[in-house]
Image (cartoon, rainbow, N blue to C red; front, side, top):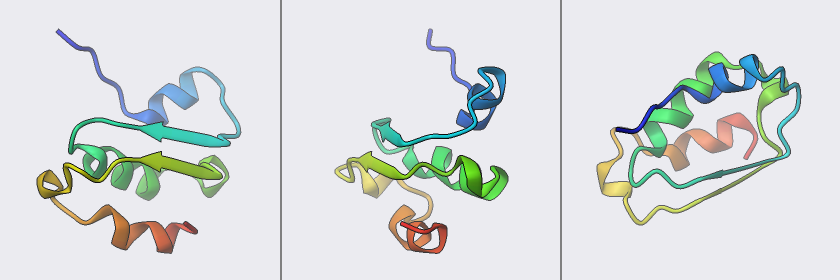
Length: 73
């Protein structure tokens, strides 16, 4: 069993106020995590840099790369 939590919940519980780098590798579920994060989080919590794979982009329900430029990436 794997326990999961949305990244915004984790940042809030840990009192994180700035994110410099986000490294995400969740086998095709990047959109299901990143898109709600960018929709719900304050822009001050947006990471300065994101490192991610796109080898599983066929599993994405929305193209993350189309949303990232609107979020400043």
